Length: 147
Image (cartoon, one colour):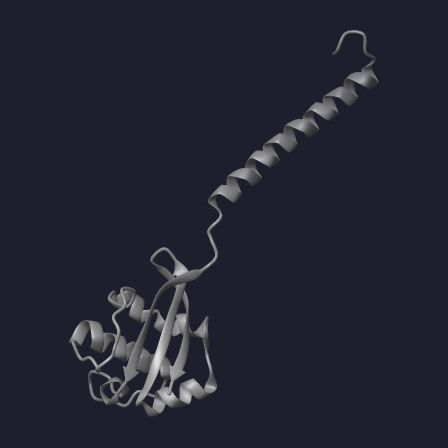
C-alpha cells in the first residue's frame, strides 16, 4: 500500500506497475528474437556446367529421366568420379555428397523452366546453377540454360 493513497488508487498503481513489467519483459524478448533472427537466403555458390552424354546416365548405366537426377549426376561425375566436360566449373557446395542428395528438394523449392527441363533431359546444353541458402546450408536452386 502506498501511503496517502486510497485502496482503489493503490490497486491502479499496482496494475500499472504490473503492465509496465510485462511490457519490459516483452520488449526484451522481441529484441532478443530480432538479434537471433536468421537472414534471408542468399546466393552461397554458383557454377556453369555442360550437360553431356555421361551426365544422362547413372553409375549403373541406366538412363536418367528427371532433370534433377541429371544435374545431380553431373555434380557426382565432377566431384566424385572425375568425369568432367570441358568448361565445367567447380563449386564448393556439391563437393559434399549429402548436399547432392538434397538436390531434388532444393530444386523443388527453387525454379527451373519447363523448356530448361526438356533441354536438360536431351543433354548437350549449358546449365547455370545458383545455390541459395544461409552459411553452408542450402535452401533452393535456380537453374537456367544457355544455348
